[in-house]
Image 1 (cartoon, rainbow, N blue to C red):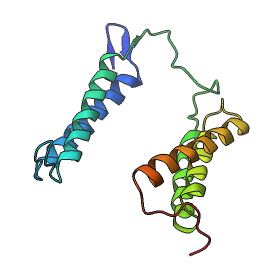
Image 2: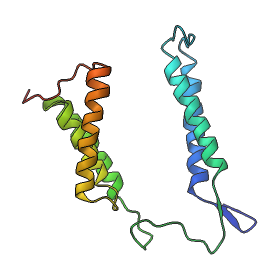
Image 3: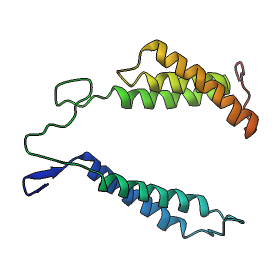
Length: 160
């Protein structure tokens, strides 16, 4: 889509998509009792997340820079037009690993698995950096989810 020799980059369209999804979520949440801040109903959280998502999309779309006809999109990690699926594959595999590790091994192995595998999706990360990040997030997960929120998931579990 061109406007005067310039076309919007992917941030414009990504922001518009976020506005559409966030607005749809906020609209759908109105079918539930939203309640008030003091007495939240079942629709309060989906409505709030939808509104925040839509506002974030507006900010992203407004900050989208126009690129000229000679400007190339930033290609991270490679110089060809073929999409790099490494990041997407690592996120999907990390989520699957989190599920199975959480189900059979506990919170600590599940947290390590998802953070380590997902961090490998960034080509600029070394294996050691992924390891340190995963170990750090295990500490955060224990403090926030197990201790502060008291999520009923054992730290370590062996088998079923």
